Amino acid sequence: MCDATTALLVVNVASAGLKYKSQKAQQEHAYNAQKRQNELAKTNAIRRYASEQLRIRQELSKAAKKDYEGSLKSRKIRATFISQAGDAGGLALSGSTNRLLADYYRTEGKFRNAIRNNMAINISQFERNLEAIQFGQEAQSTYVTPPNPHLLFATQALNVANAYYTLEAKKQMSGLMSSSDKKNQWASIDDVR
Image (cartoon, rainbow, N blue to C red; front, side, top):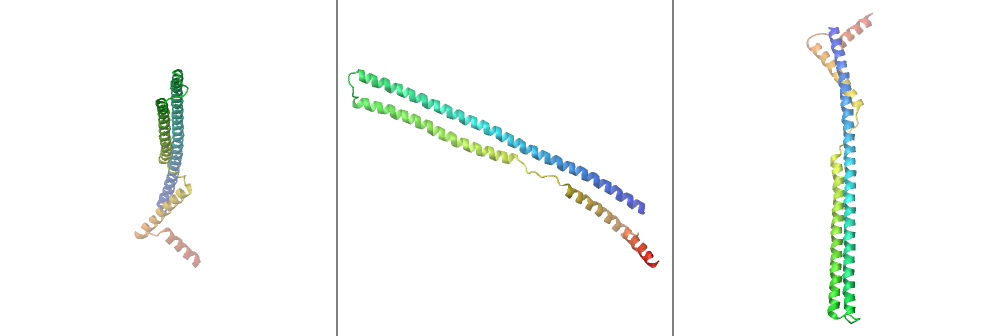
């Protein structure tokens, strides 16, 4: 009976060792997968940041170009208007001419103001997009759990001990002598000698 118990205990120890190795490999695989996921999330966020920054630079460039073209057009029209008024015979501009010239200035100011307002909206949206990218990276990232071989080993050792004591309890319940009973019996025999 002792041989069967020992054999069962050896099988249980071997099984615990295999479980330990398997679970340790699983933990390492999960840890590496978590690290890869976080690296991918970071790389994705960096690419999205770069794309968003390129887009806002293009918008700023386009707005500056529109502003420049609008200013040139307005100046050409005013210069043509002033030169025609001067050719008409007077150095001083009349009241209606001044009002028409003021209308050109007002129209140019509204145009430039509209460009600035649109760029302020675009910049505000750009900042929201950057926040969304950061939030997206955090959402795509996972909590990294490093492998814990000590806990695995302790768990498997406790499983072996549990199996051993379960066997001993079953022996005692079935009326057989457990290993501790045998040790106590041999110890009492040694004490008698």
